[in-house]
Length: 148
Image 1: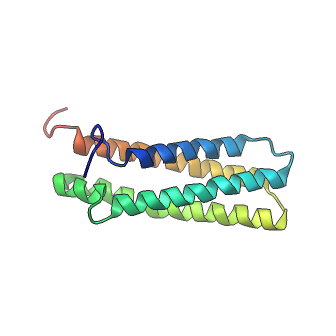
Image 2: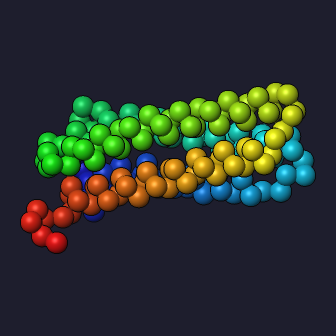
């Protein structure tokens, strides 16, 4: 596995970060035209689902970074399990938001505030997941065992 500056999957991380920012932008965009607002949010959520799916597939692959971390530093196994659990939860949240935005676009019954709240919770959860992932990667690839 090729680690740029000790950080595998840097491009994925950056793509997820950009999409999280796009999600924030969609949440806070003016909603006077509710149909257009929901359509824009839906587009961001669909892209987020594709990129997050790629992230999960690559990191959880048999030769992915999570398997490599456990192989290099078995004591990090519980944290890897937590990251994998978060993948399942986040994937579910993305699918739920995609379903909510799809329904809103189809019925033109746009519950802007509830969609904003749901999308905001998702953005927060992704932000925390990325922070935990960065800490895990740092400890696995950059921290010398026994050092503080």
